[in-house]
Length: 365
Image (tube, rainbow, N blue to C red; front, side, top):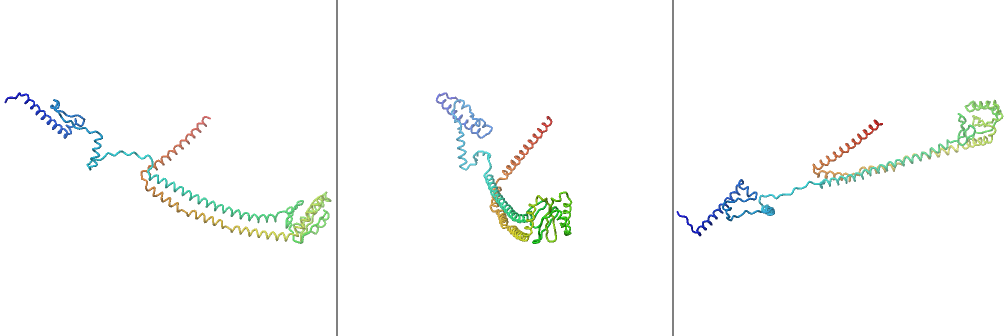
């Protein structure tokens, strides 16, 4: 068969050959896209070319979509229901406590506030009770003091002379206590010799025997002329009170007071007993008046029983704690335990440093 050399015919053959080469190249590109091992050039941005393409044949390049186009395509495919999951951004860890922990902390603070008010109410009631008891004890003490003062006043001395002490109902002379008999007491002033003579007939009583010896000793002394005696007679008993003649004026005044005390003994004793009875009745009345104490005790019981708000606050704390995630509670407990351990370690370190410093200072000194 002979080959045609017509130029027009040659151009047609070359056109047909180019079209065949382009179709072969497109087929080869499609096959490469379906085969992962042969698709490496397209994946890396390269396009495989055939001999025809190298010769200048027109070949269609694959389209390159931008990142925005790919994201838009992904959104469209996800919107259309295709099996493509959108990429979700990673959430950062919370920087503070959760809302449940915040609510729990608020509930705890509120509970502490209410508990503080509850405890303060109990303390105020206890203080009021203690104050009522103290006031009652002070009132009883004041009433008893009136009775004690009356007794002390009745038993207090009303006069003194030489070694004698005059009371409302008796005379204390040395170790003797000479009691009065109402409306049967008299006094007189005697010299040493007169006292010696009269003492011979003194009764054989403690006061009489003591007075007789006192008169005999004074009569036998060198200054017997200067010695004087107050003779006190009460019923069948006699007492001698010795003094120096220069004190006779005071002696007579003291003797007069003895007689007056003996004369007023019954009325003084009666008045004293009446006042003592009144004071004792007042002590009993004040002691029995514990109404303020009972009221304070009731107030204290009411303060302790008023736990409605406290129980409600405790319930809110329980509910709030139950809502907090367990891991968050455990994390907080861990932090608190760690903080306590750190504080204990710091204190221990300080103690060790101080002890070492003391030891070093002592060793150097």
